[in-house]
Length: 608
Image (cartoon, rainbow, N blue to C red; front, top):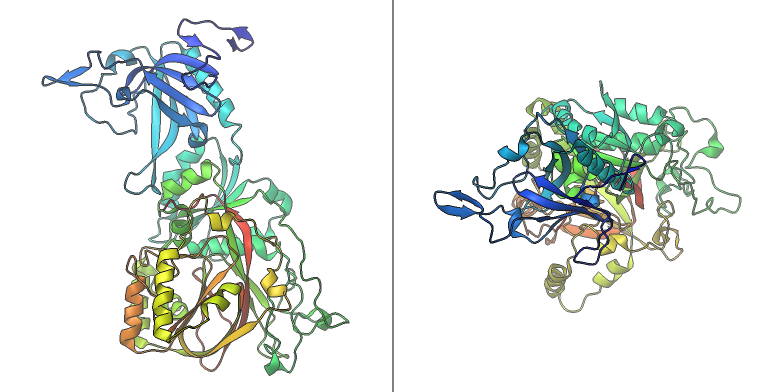
């Protein structure tokens, strides 16, 4: 065996043996495993495996006359994949560190005699909760050998294998929101920071000093600067992540504005459709070049500039990540399955990858002479108006209450029971056409539809078949349903308690199934939820169904649910405000479209 250019021979070390399963082992040694005893550790191409040298005939530990064998020793072999290992390190022989792995009994084979003069190395991994497989906790395997060179050899070999794992970050830009949730953002980062340090990941940490700080940093960062990072992390809530997302996309994502119905701007006396989103001008307060105004510009033949514009983001490998420290953390729950900082940190250091849909939301001018320019914003989880906008507005007054401010604000808004007159347009898709066919009474159709949804409901999860289906359009292209001449716009007009567009299911502690239980993370569709004005009692019933696991909040006559790639909104009369991923956005006239898989997150999806 070569070590530092020389050949090393040992009676308890072998190289390139064939194990019982026919795999060729790269390395094999007899080592002591903490809480187990002596084992034969083998390194294969895909991971580590070990077998206890104790047999069922051996004299195990005896406690009160009862014979115990180490739990690991009762198994023929134990394996650990490299894809589940995030770090390995040699520890000081004078430091006695207990394993994170639970013990079956305190009367296992003792390690005290083995620890004398023993050198150790630790393999850091994770284990899943038996009751909640989405919840991951830190785990460590502590191996020992009296020969320091043997331990160092194992560390080097394992590190060589870990370096071949694709997609693991080396450099990260971290934004910490110190006031997120209960003001624990900084403390939560300090809790998970050792995981990144142990995994040898360089982190540049910016603790934000004011609202919009992270947005400004992301907007002003050059592509060269961002290319030096493998990812950008948000230690905070959904609103803080939205700030970073918009800072990243606003100056980099160039694509056509959402398509709109031909009469969307009739009130302005102008039927021109929007052209291309210029990130350098969309938010400008002074926009004097009338030919570049999206409300007025069109090509000579009256058509749009290229319907499909390819403009990839500057760093295709750059991923975003979230360490949850907010009040709801719906994005984290939907993408990892657990609202837990340790779980999220492990997803990040292990280089997990999950694509997410992103909605582009455009606020339009009220009149052709309005000084308000079209403004583009992005949302990754939800856009809500009416009840949702009023709650977020009201909750801003009670930030000092922490996460309870949403409950208090929600109660106040519910009691006021405000509705808003508006017109909503949305693009029809094939599934909507099929579901709109009635055979028999409306009640029979509703019952039949409900039974079908219950039996055919496909929940988005890790390695989701729906999200992994190759799209017929690129993530940076307009979906066919929008650009197709056969696209048909449908409208709903009236008084609404709320208008919502769910990009994902939005599971959270207050809505365990989310707003739409079977919404997917990357299928290229929005779920438009229109809650029409109704009596207090019925609306309370709807909210109660949202808060109940297995509830049916969409099974009401006053609830419209439409799956669509794009929608428009026009307020009529008294207005509310929009809630985009927890951030306020005021818009009288709005259009939105979804881009499939526009960004990637350090996550793997929930295990359902």
